[in-house]
Amino acid sequence: MATSDVLDLTRELISRPSVTPDDSGCQQLLAQRLKAAGFRCEHLRFGEVDNLWAVHGAGEGPTLVLLGHTDVVPPGPREAWGSDPFVPEIRDGLLYGRGAADMKGSVAAFVVALERFAATHPEHPGRVALLLTSDEEGDAVDGVRKVADLFRERGERVDWCVTGEPSSTARLGDLLRVGRRGTLSATLTVRGIQGHVAYPEKARNPIHQAMPALAELSARRWDDGYETFPPTSLQISNVHAGTGANNVIPGEMQVLFNLRYNPTWNAAQLEQQCEDVLRSHGLEYAIHWHRGGEPFYTPEGPLRAAARDVLASFSGAAPVESTGGGTSDARFIAPLGAQCIEIGPVNASIHKVDEHVSVADLQALPDLYLALIERLILRA
Image (cartoon, rainbow, N blue to C red):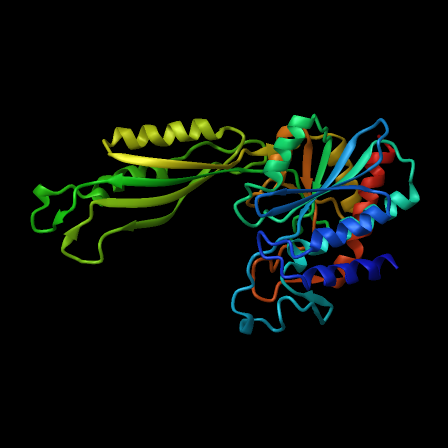
């Protein structure tokens, strides 16, 4: 029943076109199930974003949170898909649909595992909880970031957090994510003086002025890495200037860039370093920074040990323990003092046309999450 249940629930979630920040009723559906299983459910809406906090248990002991999101990225041209992205379809052992891997399959598996745990261990120690948002794929302002602020005000304790992001590479359980880099974005405006290209002495070209500074920033080796983290990197993602005419020196240039950084740095330090370079080149500029989240890292301890053993039993070998990839909402939970890891299905098709998940992997996920919950809560 459990394996068919997770497949049916995933299908139902996929059929709801919950493109960020629209939840399309996914969280209401899941809350109804969890309430029936004895969970206390709280709907936390901030702006246009829905968040669900569901908790079971109240006794002494640790708090384990399963963290996920119900929103998905837009499907793109529907005619490019082999089937409607919001009509789940199984072909050759794969379940197709937007969100199948990222991350409605994991969310469904979370719910099924929590239902089974509460039914089997109604008087368990500590607390198990599910936290969902509809703002992970978007700006991530009114989602888990805002919920974490609320948790701070309440004094809400989180000891362990398991995020269901698709982390596996070739087979379910072959990779354990134990940290993520921080992300810092900048919108840089370099001001010059517009003029005719034939009279450069009467103008000031912001492109020419900015290029040496940008070259220095992009070529800089920020550090040599940290623990299992790769070195910090800066990537320029967009450059815009000009009026469209080839005989006009533009008066302004806009540059977008992003830093992905390890625990060697924090956002404030990187902002200072970048602006020092810009000032050293004599630029007249304005810059807007967006701090997407600080890096987090879970050192060796009960959470990593339990996850390693559980994943090895499912995949047949000890998982690779990695800090690679982009970002996840765990970056907002880690500063609460929680140890955070990520375990999910194979990351092969997320955000792509014909996103899919293996039906066999999907049916195994509730057992995997249940084994991890029991190992952490019952042996604490």
